[in-house]
Length: 487
Image (cartoon, rainbow, N blue to C red):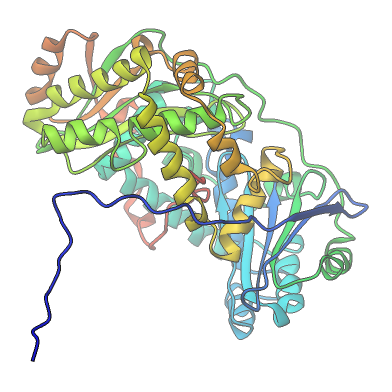
């Protein structure tokens, strides 16, 4: 009897990348109804499911600091029910058809969505429309959601990573830019909000002109148009105009801001600046630039600070694209004793990529990575609906995601270098470190990369964590935000 010979792969050689699988973004059909509500429909019939979203021009960027967080609170308060149904009754009615409402409020928009069986779509649309167009905003429910917001705000002040994010935004942007404050507001701005403020925001901004109904799934366009006219046809009006501003930086020169957190054994590091708006012509080259720098596990920042130096488990860079210029930042957490070397190495990688540009091999790998993972973010009706919502918010063509991979493939080496050099300014980047000031200030000063200033958490927008009254600290909120962008 012959004995089978076992064979094993040679693990000393990295596996070759596979071929990129074909993928087609479902065609988007656009129309509108007489009140100005836009319709965008995409057919996906792999499963008998449908996602319905209403995208509203009602983001936090519309608001001044004094009412920061009102858009987030208003979106959450929709779960308090309609004039006909209480919050629990609405939740039960949705559960009976196998769905539930999801509300996401970001800087540029508020999106209300649900996913259900295609055969229950009309029932789901009827409930969504009722809640959106006839919200009750009962005082008890608004108070509950406000207290949840206050608890979340308090929690963010206690968490070093969240504190670093908020501090970075504060020091990246000038005070007149809404982005300098936390998305969901501060204890001071949210604490005084009640049903009147919430109702006024909804009445002013929850309007059909400029809004859109997105439907993705096993559905016909004619069916969506009929439902839109039936359930949203009597809705009228345009939202108030606002939110126009120039996203100016707080500083024009590099500096280090240390947010003192006594007793910290780690430092949260954020390095960045004001970036560019979503409308930038450099959008696609910047996708590749960021992938090379810190947008993938094999990025320069990861290979240096994680693999070579052992400073951190992970480090990333990111552009936050918004209607106005959002932030670009590098983020990581390291042990206190290696804070200064980590900052030095991160700056060196940023400066090196901007000055010398990526290699041809890095660009090719970045292209392959982005093109390869692109379909993984678009596997469900909900994921596709979120992307189609971006077409509305940022006024993008209907075939934007259908041609996304081709646009990435067309980016050349010189395009990536030009985009990085035109957008990023290393000598103006602000470095924010949350950690033990007594332990890290001296080593940071020795780097000689910019003046070092120590600030206290209460010096930031929103004040100290202890400003939230103890009786308000209950509930278990999740942080509000927009769906993650496609790479």
